[in-house]
Length: 361
Image (tube, rainbow, N blue to C red; front, side, top):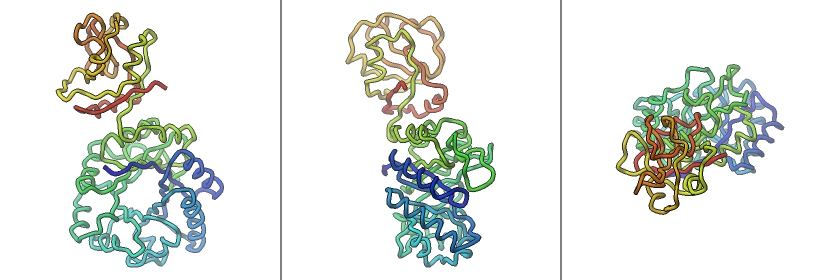
């Protein structure tokens, strides 16, 4: 598994240097290391070069690496060549993302550029595009993948299609990236901005929930906030999440006991390998904790996402923790909390042997 990173997007054609610099400084504070910039048009080459060069080199000084989103048309406008990427190197960029594809042979040749720039490919297609490029003996360590984002509501990728596209890249061990959408950001590359996620299902979710899902899919290495400017609260919440382990945000019931709270919030849980469709079971707490656990909060039917701990009436299973996957009733179990509604979609990542934790904000 490669290291997982978080990134920001800025749009120099639609912003000013001072705001961009302040945003990058805030990103640096919270451990962001990638910048995505769209460079799909350049009306004045010299002005564009000056503007982009300034902000990219500012980012470089503060621990960022920048990817420039380019198209075949922009090469001609800038006077750049597929055999000479020095223009982009002079800007200070670390990578160029090819928003549109070429013929496979061209991308493979680009991956051997003497500037040693990374060539990022558009991942949002379920074709043989990548296989074609690799068939021309591409320089694989310099080939990355990055999904599109979608400013128009309703037009983001369906979850299943996203998975199919992403698997095409991960099966080759290609480093991957996708976008999440700030609920505060209003800047993007176009004059339509209903948010900038890769997946449609993410569009209105909190930014950290979107990122949890992308990371836990094990298909995405880097998560980039597509629109700017995200709020400081969003930057902080995304930076604080565990990029490698499923962490679920839970609301505890009022009458949770001391031992139940300890089991819920301090134990490192994992789902038993012999899984079932009713509940995800974390059985080690029953081995470790022998404290009394009287019945409470067990009169109503348990709902999907409820967190249960078996009470004194459940014999050998006392103090086992369970996550409800199907509604059911059982007075031998206490409801101790519930996963927040925004995160219920993360239950699909509770696979057999999955390690997970809970947090209560």
